Image 1 (cartoon, rainbow, N blue to C red):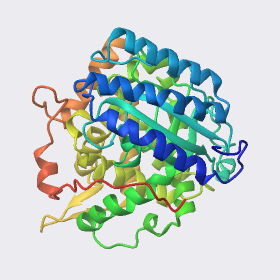
Image 2: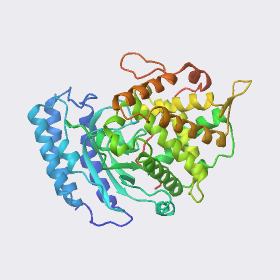
Image 3: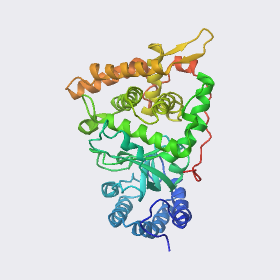
Image 4: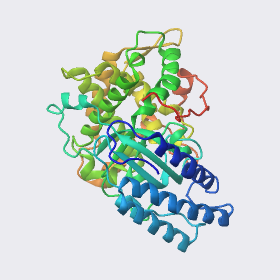
Length: 417
């Protein structure tokens, strides 16, 4: 007996325990046999045995949740991988195609080779799984008329169980392009954010750096309760997603271009800057001040400390934002070398960055010219890196943000919400 279907608010602990004890342990062992491309590079026979052991367990989970199409897709993808040889990269195209978002308050589950961005090293398309419950903040209704989503693909969720990539480290997202497939993604039909992980990351990693760099001010964001922090992070995601569909080159019509590294970096940064600006200047936006702090501090003082920062466009965007705000004197360097941050000045400067990106880069209708301009703009702030790196860390950042990165991985087995 696994669980009872059609949960409302709560999910059976028996179901979570079943997944943890019977599936997660096998996946975590399987991950140890893979390299970052997903290829099995150690003990092929043990890997085959683990996959075969997973099949009936995955089948029972998908069956319990009523995801028959996903169950069939998983079986087909495993068969395809076994046929081509586990020493070759996996391709779970059928699972990616079959995966669909669930309704609010319902559970969702996925298993397959997934890139867990900002997760624990090694970062690659390793076998992963997660069980989550979609929980959409009701506060979205307060801004829906001002910021109506044309294609609301974002889903807010509470992660309940998962493999090591999701349950340790800082991965908060699950996108279709993160799944290992042969075919390139041309449309982003879902974007799941595990928002109940956010507060622990923010309070454990981001805010200590904020206080060290910008001082012990009366910051608003650390005061949020667990549920309010979930809602505020969801609101940040909602507005960020909304702005993906605005401007000269909306994401849904330019996804193939904005999955490129330099243009993708600017896209993520632009949407966050617009989120901060809209929060500050639009009456009635819940958690406006908290979201502005999220944008600034997460970009500049968490993303920039990821282990794979020189290959990570979130990290690159944080470095670029810091450089821009210092150049624009929204962040001022004091005589003693300390930094002073003014939120109002930062919001104005971020909007200046948005208008610069749109007028100088996105205004061209030529796709190749657009990509060329994006790279040239990023390179003004991020110097060229070594082989295999998109950039190197600017000297000014290293001098002004002189903090040793904390490499201790957070665990998310127990969450307050």
